[in-house]
Structure formats: structure tokens, C-alpha cells
Image (cartoon, rainbow, N blue to C red; front, top):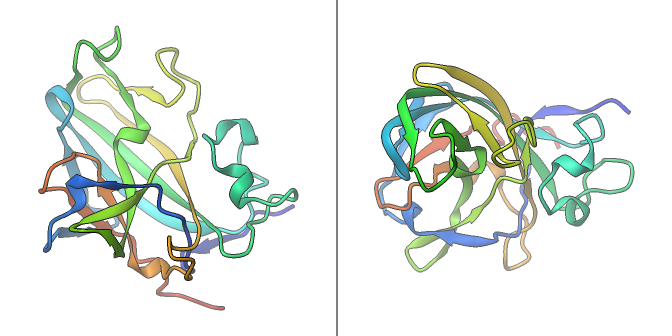
Length: 208
């Protein structure tokens, strides 16, 4: 079955938690293709992360097997690989560069091993708990299991660059209403009030 790659448009996701670092009233937004730096949780340096593209996929059957998804596959995907009603799969292509980054020594034996699911989550600008946004975690990593330290990990020496995909299952809002994907943003998981948002431009070419 041919995968349908569409520019992200529709709504979707049951938010799983909230991220205190995404709670400020006037966040700084950058665009797809612009780099942001992530230094929280590192012993030194920073990781420069660029969202190269953002797409909505309606058929995940041509992606690697279900085993490479973290946990929410059955909740959102039908047996033929298409999405259930009210669900979407959002795929971000990331470029990550190490700006002399080193992980904290108590994380892994190798200081140059980092976690893909520590970089970006998705948030909906219309859905909060108090001042904080609920967030949607990573549920797919294209290099899953390739690093022995952890299945969600990748290795990156100072000055090196790596590219990979991360994916998010997006369903209806917590109150059961449809989600407008144009209100989704990628958010750094830094855990502080200065987290940056990436405007993914989802929904601008809506064709349904």
C-alpha cells in the first residue's frame, strides 16, 4: 500500500501530560528550517536542532514495523496501516548538530549518547492545564534500537550532525473535540519558562 504523504493539515490527539517548560504567555516562535539550541539536561555544550520538514501521514504501513513505535500504535492505527477516524500521524524530519554537547555522566557510559525523545514534544496552543500546555510525546524514532545504550538513543560527537525522523500520534482533544493541527507547535522539552516553539505550518494547505 502506498504511503500517503500529505502536508500536515487535520486535527488530532489525546494529550498525555503537561510540560511546565511550555507555559509562558508569549512564547518565542521560530519557523521550520530555523535552528534552535537545547542545552537543558546536558553536562556541557548544546544540541542544535532544526525541524527540516513537518508532514501528516495518513498511512503508516510503509514505515518500519510496528515494533519501532513506542506505545500508542494500536490506539491510532487500523490493521491496514491507515489512521483511525480522528487520528493523525505527524512526522518531523530533524537535523541535530552537536555544539560540543556532552550528556551528564550519570545518564549513560558514553557522554555523546543522547535521547531522541528528549528533544521536542508537540503542544496545542489551545489546550492548557492552568498556565501550562499539555504535550504530546514522541512515539516513533527512525533510528530506534540502533544505539546499544538505549532504544531511543543516538550518538553524536562534538561537531557532528545527524538526521532522523520522529513521529507523534495525534488524536482528538482531551474534551473529545476535533483538533486543529494548525495550532500544533513543536516545543523544546527543556522544562523552563524559556522554551522555544516551532511553528510547523500545519493545516495551511488543507484539502478536505
